[in-house]
Image 1 (cartoon, rainbow, N blue to C red):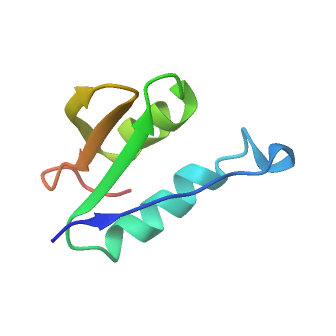
Image 2 (image 1 turned 90 degrees about the horizontal axis):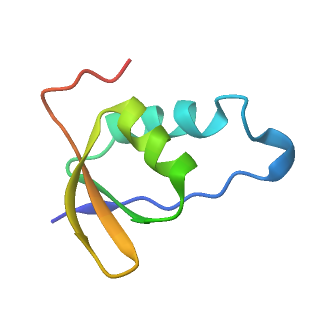
Length: 74
């Protein structure tokens, strides 16, 4: 079973590393974290990749990213 993650960062906290820090912390506590990210949400895609998520599936409006267990959460 996968663990799906959803988050939103309020505008006043963007570009301060809040999403990256939170995603790293949450990822360490999950068995099989999965992110469904809109294809046009370039900031969330960058954050996911920075933490170690890899593109798993694409189609329609969303892309699915899974955590690459060979990556080390920093």
